[in-house]
Length: 168
Image (cartoon, rainbow, N blue to C red; front, side, top):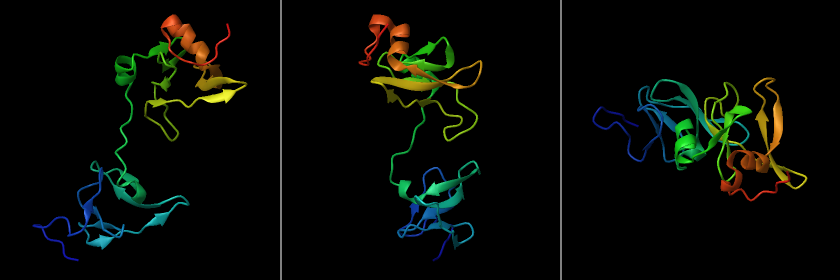
């Protein structure tokens, strides 16, 4: 395998999105570091194969080999949730907002967890025929199960288009 300044990416290799320029992936799925001229060790976490590499800012991360052809994940932003989706902030839970169709977002990112630092949409779950979301109480920091229909009706009233069941 020869690497020269004139040919930065070896033939048949592809650039890895979000990774530093000297990391490329071979047609066989191995990551090649063109700076050192070595292939990097693959690891298995029980679900997929990954290699530890660095991004363009120099921060280390796990590159999952099966995700190279997936569309790049674009996280939500607080501005998009409040301005484009027109969600309203829930007064009792100021870290959360709800849209007219019942989508509940965490607009104040948490410091820990798999979605730390990201604005995200919460997953609903059903209980006795109603949809609920778990919202963290700002005073006690304990999760509270709250009906989505009740939140939508409380903030949006007749403008809400959420199709869930609501009983006053």
